[in-house]
Image (cartoon, rainbow, N blue to C red; front, top):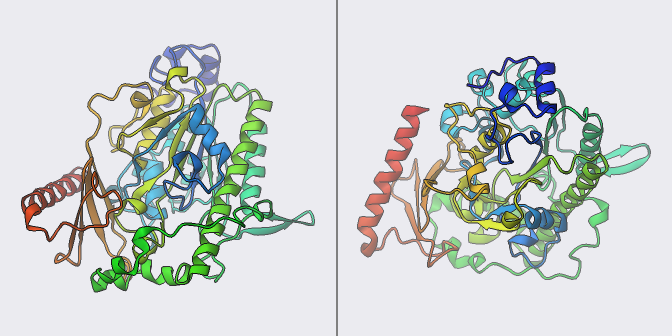
Length: 467
C-alpha cells in the first residue's frame, strides 16, 4: 500500500532521483519504470458534445489544437458520462464514483468528506503534487475541503466578459491567463496537476443570445451553413410521450432552435465558444514547451456531458441518448510509444475512470472505493477484461427533467424513466446509431427488452448495495 503520509520534501527528492520504491510504486504509471512521474493538465469543457471537434469527423468546427492532441495522443470514441448534468458529473470526475454513491447533484448537500477524501486532487496533493484549480468548480464541498484538494484555486462564476486593464477580455482567455500563471509558478522539481475547468461552451440561460465567445472568434463560421440533423424532423418530437414533450429539453429548444435562422446563429455561437477554448489549449502547449515541461506533462481533455443541438426537437442534455451522455475524451501522454499515437479506441470508458487514471499513472494506489477503472492498460494496448456495458443515470428530482436510467451495450441501449414505467426505449445501435427507431414496442424484441430491463435493474440494485 502506498504511504500517502510521506513528507512532501522526501517524496519530491525521491521523485527527482527516480527512486520509484520510496514514494511511488515502480511501473504503476503508463511510462517506463524509473522515469520521472508525470505532471497533469486536466481540461474539462462544459457541454461539449462528442463530435464538436474536427478529429471526430466534424467538417465545420475549427479545433486544430484539440485535433493535434488526438493526433499525438489517443482519442476514445466511446467515452460516456455516468450522469449527463454538470453538477453530478463533476462530482463523479473528482471522486471516481457514480451519482448514486456520492449523492451529489443540484440542490443536494455538499459532497461528504468520506468521498472527497478519495478525490484525485486530495490524493495527488498528499502524495506531493502541487495541485491547482481554475474555472467552474460546479460542486459543493464541506468546509476546509477545498484547501485539502488544491494548493491554489481560482473559482469563477459565469460572467463571460470582464474589463481588465482597460481591455475587454473573455472568461475563456482569462482562464488561459491564470493557467499560464500557475504553470510559471511551479517548481521545476515539483510535479503538478492543474485542473482547468472552462465555463464555455455553456449557454447563458437567462440571455436570449445564449452563446458568447472571444472576439478573436468573431469571423469563424460566418459563411458556413450548419446542416440540420435528420432527427430534428418534427415527426420525431411528435411521437414522444407528453412528459418528454413538456421537458426542459423542449423548453430550451424554443430558446435556441425554433426557427432556421436561430438554429444557424446558435450552433455557430456554440462552435465559436469551443474554438475559443481550442486557442487556449494551443497557448498552454506553447507555454509548456517554453518551460521545458512538455515532455513530462500529460494532457487530458474531456467534457462534463453531451448536448442536443436540435435533435429530437431538443436542446440541452439530461437524457440517456448518446448525444447527451457521449463526450470527447483525449489523452496525450508524451511518453506514449510512437506506435500508439493517433489511436482511436472504441472501448466503453466513463467519466469515473478519470480519477483512477490520474492516480495510477502517477504510481499511486487507486482506492478500492472508487468505482471507475484506470485507463492506463488501454493506453498501453492491454484491453483484456474491459467492461462490455455501461450504466448511466440522472437522479435530480426536477419537475421538468425526468429521472432516468439506461443500460448500454455495444449494440443495444435500454432506457427507462422512474416516474413513467409505462414508457421505455430500446435501440439497436449497430443498425440505428442515431437512435431514431424505438423498438420497445416491437413484439419481435419482447424477450430482449425483458432481458435488458432485468439486467438494468440488477446493475443499479448492485450499485445501490455496494455504494
